[in-house]
Image 1 (tube, rainbow, N blue to C red):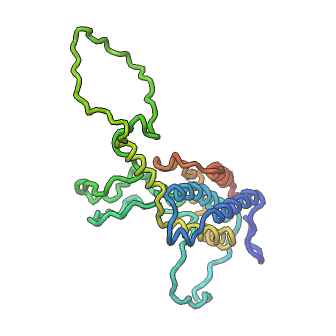
Image 2: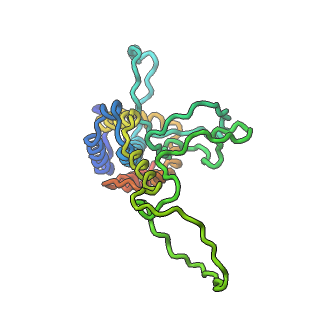
Length: 306
């Protein structure tokens, strides 16, 4: 392992190309979005979903590059309390960029949470799954029961998601797709059997089917402006980490002094999350952020601690 020099941390040579591409991705995303407008006026749900897809790949890439760089150096000794400067005046703490979270080995029992009755929050931007690096050593999600206090399941009181279509689609609907041909054999019909017909209302060519009204409602929900202070804070954290990765690499190296081998073994198995939520699979994104995250993970998996 390489010690830290006097002028600061140096990105290892095998990671410099990947790190340069990661900084280009950060610059590209920062130029695309106005963070002040995101906090006040907001951005469209569709643009927020596209930004979240990009962040899913870029943040995963930067986490793995920082973790790989931290494994190549020996950090200096921890600072003592006496050497620390006086605390600064209280001020709002900006959102930090977490590299990884390592759960304790004996953390098998999960804390039981009681579900409290509260007014449901309105639907905002779509939530994406967290990076697997933020749950290293945690039991699988199937073994955890969130919000379970041992009693019966409480009914959901939240309204249906406005980004979902309601009702049956008509043939005039832009989202309608012709059904696939059925492969099941058809049953023979009795030619002598009488067929009963139900009385239908007369067709009005000027009337729109309810499906088209629901399509318009669904379209307007995707175009609605929703404030996104959380996404703007993540962009701020990315900007800071891209401008000065040395501090993040040093903090990560210090955290790895006690559990280096275990953290590396768990991180190698924590591949980046590539599946996006069902509601955003139609959103088109330009670029290859998910494939870039896989390349950064391969660099981490190939790291040799010896």
